[in-house]
Image 1 (cartoon, rainbow, N blue to C red):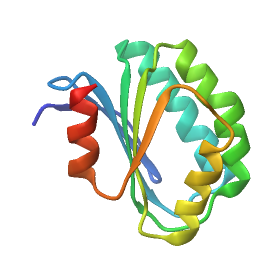
Image 2: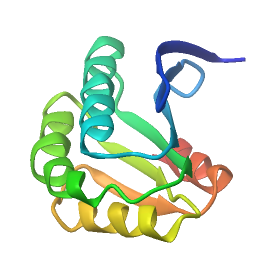
Image 3: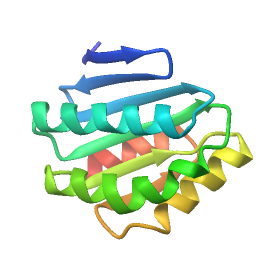
Length: 131
């Protein structure tokens, strides 16, 4: 396995994938403003620590809406991540329709970095490898 666990909480696990030089972030279960902000700030810390430019953000196992965090994510967190060196962000949708809507809402509030959404992990990985 080419991943090193950096942080683990009940709702998020953050790994550094040193073969691909990206953060792999696995979100789990119900999310809300507090869990999203806390998890995102941990991601920012890890991005700075590992000095990587790519994130594979996996929402496959997210089970709820978290739209109250969308504007903060787009207007505050993504600019901070970009400033910390993030260039490419592959976002794998949750099968949960409300989580998907929360993702789309977040994307309406930001222009950078380059963010693409995917329905499955393999396609997201393939895109991120090409960047």
